[in-house]
Structures are given as C-alpha cells and as structure tokens.
Image (cartoon, rainbow, N blue to C red; front, side, top):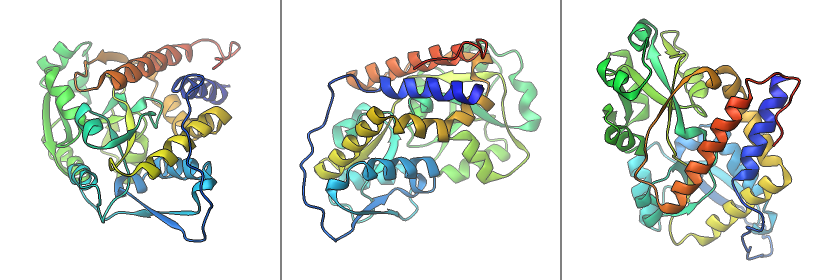
Length: 313
C-alpha cells in the first residue's frame, strides 16, 4: 500500500538524520510543579506539524519538568532572528527556520532537519491562469527564458539561494502579503516547501491558487530549531527529545503523519528536478543537507516501484 510505503521511506530518512552513538548528555533535574513556558514563533505555532514536534520533543524529556507552549505576537522572520540574537528576548524563546552560516553563528541551532529535509524541495504555487507559462521548462535556463519570477520572504535564506542561481526574485517581509502579490501578478511562482504547501493552500482556501504539476526545485537547506545562544537548557531539551524520538521510531511516525500525504499527492517522482546550489551553509549543515537531499531523492524514486516490493528503511 502506498501509505505504508511512504511511512517506510520517511522512517528511513528519520533514522539517517543521526548516526549510531550520537547522544546528548542531559542535565537531569527534579521536575518542579512550576510549568515552564516556551514562547514559539507564531508562524510555527500556527503550523500543526511544527507545534506537534516541539510537544513531542518535550514529552520525551520529562526530567526537565512540565511545560506550556505559547504563541508569540505576530512578527516577520527577520524580527524573530533579531529577538533571539538579543539573548534575553521577552517575546520569543524558539523558532524553526531554515539554517544559514550566519544564523548558526549568532544563535544556537539544534542540527536535526525537522521535516526530514523536505523544506529544500520546493514546488510553485501559481495562479491557475498562469499554468501555460510553465509548459516546456526543463532547466534553470528555461525558467529564466520564460520570464518566471519567484516570490519569497525578504528574510528567507531561499531568496539569496535563488538569486545566486540566476533566478529573478521578488520579496516582501510578510508571508501573508506574498499571496496577495501573487494574486496581483507581481511574480509568477510562490515557491513553497513540500512540507508546508498543502497546509498553506488549505489556509488560503482560494481556488485560483494551484500547485504547478511538473517542476521541483531542489537544494540542500536543512530547517532547524533555533534558540538564543545562552539558552542551553531549551537547546538540550529539544535535541535530546528529538534524538529519543528518532531512536524509538516516534519521529518516523511524526514524519509520516504530517508529511506522508504531501509525498503522495505532489507526485514528486514524476517531476522535473531543477537542482540549485546553496553556498550559504556551514560545512556541517552542507553535509547534513546534501546527505538528506540525496536520501530523499533516492527514496522518492523508489516510490515508483511496484507496491509488491515495499521500501524498507
């Protein structure tokens, strides 16, 4: 069955994210009655899959005590990064964003891709009337010759990645405004991660927005949780909890529950893949991103084999 096959390869990706023998030493403490509040960036809080992963990691680490996840005020991604850089932000404790060398230098990263690397696989959300513009595109050169402009957030690492690969990019600081810009023909493609696009369109609930069916942009871009550099306890709790979830299989269950549908519905194995370089990663994250991207592409191809030969992790 396809659902079972999606589970198998997602579970395999999950286990490949950490090698054998890798662990985090936990500073065990007595759980107090006081509930610890963790303020999660509102864009992550409003995403059921990201909020669920934070809860999963915290549930796996009861020695740190009871917790409550709360929603931050609405703010752009650039503002969130600046708040976390302040070390003692009164607005946010943790956020999930794509990694860059600069972010890993200024903040504390938990270096486990939260969606198994799917954020680096991107499809185009387009206006239904614009679909003919994408016909016949087989390369980045074709994309440029067709005059396709891609919309992205002003502070998203994707914007710089696309630009250094020769793609014309139109930006705005607010995610919500980008859909209105697409609607007003400011650009032709709003590139969204495979792990998030179905949720995005469900929220928009607009029949004029559709997913272009033939192209897949691919580049290594791990998506990590980030906290302030001096917030060692939250960083330890998140990493320890995620590693425990990977080893006991619950992270694989999580990937299948929240991302298995996207793998099935987006037909990734039948798309033309446009591979882009990402020169903005640290050496460690570049290796993680390349390994995860290779594993994703290998397992996506295996989905096209007969159901009688199930994929094993």
